[in-house]
Length: 274
Image 1 (cartoon, rainbow, N blue to C red):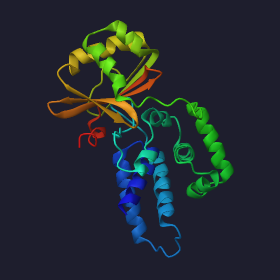
Image 2 (cartoon, rainbow, N blue to C red):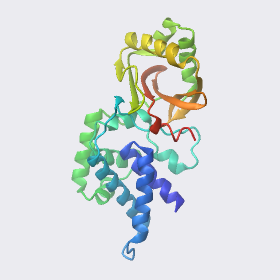
Image 3 (cartoon, rainbow, N blue to C red):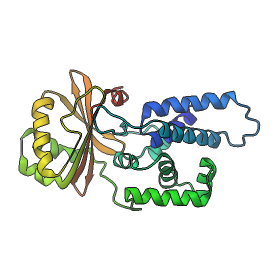
């Protein structure tokens, strides 16, 4: 049952972007399944997948994203060494999870089931109780919204790609930062309801370089900084007196940093702290 629970968590997480909510939903799905009459159910695993995905869609439709400080970002999941092939296959890269926020819950579910898990439209239609044609339409709409290109270049997963970036910040080497950052690099920050952020969103190398230099000097200089992989993308973890206070996830393409996602919301850092 533990393998099933992990599978349900990852299905729910890709729809919700929240690991804590996904864990609760997986547990509740199993509880409901065990309490029901199951004689007519031929495939328990598929039945629970259907239950958890539809519950995740309903949950997402009921709850609007809100954040006190900054912009809403998905909860990060550390993925340096996955414990199983199930986890490795089902955890979506972070930049794609951010793009998913442009989709409604049903578009997101169809996209994940088709592009991430490789299910055909007939199977998806059975899971979501829609027609195969409707599934195809939802997928096409989702791809258009996020400008998804099949087989497109994936972000780098190399932790060492961040070492020159941190060295340049510590040395206040503006020329090096100009080489490392794409000209249209984007930064987003999520402080939740309790952590005030310097800026919610910023774009452009000329604006972001002075911003990251200021933030490092004002807040991060005395913190312990470590490297990891989050949702298959390189990331930095910032600890202040032993407490994790910031997770920065980077999208790196062709050795250029194109996106920086800074998660300071304490409720989204609790699983990384364990």
